[in-house]
Length: 293
Ligand SMILES: *Cc1c(COP(=O)(O)O)cnc(C)c1O
Image (tube, rainbow, N blue to C red):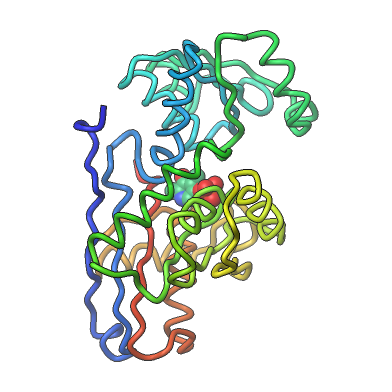
């Protein structure tokens, strides 16, 4: 299964005059290079959910997402690559023609259904309805975040430890549901300080991540926190300043970012470096969770 995936994902050092001047050492963990269609943290979160699906003898995965969801895209790609059935429950009304995410999903063999926003929001109810309708499928919540997502994401931390021969002072990543952050924390032993950068408005992450760790039976070492100042107005909102940062970063470092997750993350990190948030000599690993396509 894994030989078509680029694992362990590359860990590359960032070099620039600015970083030298600030005396910080920065690496990027290129989870975006794991697979062109199964990029980044979505593969990590799926890995053990697929194992669980096979263990239960189910024929596929049914999951939820918005019309632009990277998780819907990745689940559809995984279904085609690893030969299992997929159903995507999409929030809201059908809009035709299908956007690139949904037309990819359908071409990959995903069955698409639409769910009104009110029912969609009531996650427990939606889960129940679809489990009754599709008993042969494992139901995965939006974003692929559940208990089984944790061990796959924990692998990212283990790989960093192997690749650096130690752990860095800081590990930084973008937070949507916070599932990836919970997995990274689970893969550490309280070492490193983990900084999440929320791409949504609000401060629900603290509670959600604590809950996930609890459900996964992981003692919370409390070496993590979530920055809430870099969402640029909310989920999928963008500004000319953010777009310029992403273009400059591509030019200066040759690494692509997008404006929903990794652009906001990297903007936040560079802002913190500029403000001398990280002590001189700090080692910082930034997780590129993917999302480029
Ligand atoms: C989904 C996604 C995230 C958010 O991951 P969570 O586990 O939900 O916090 C971050 N980056 C990219 C590129 C994503 O697609």
